[in-house]
Length: 73
Image (cartoon, rainbow, N blue to C red; front, side, top):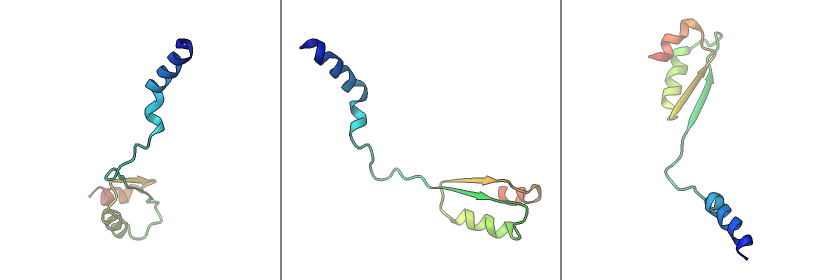
């Protein structure tokens, strides 16, 4: 009986916590990603819109060298 229970208890000790729901309110994270390519006619407006988006993390990709300063500000 011990030979059967011991591995089960060990498994539950290691992985049993994964069986229950760990979600709870207040843990949301919002991420926004934007491709700021060189053909963007209004980088200032785009930067303002991204700042107003309310995202916790902004990921900017393929920024044109001349628009980089605008997004940094």
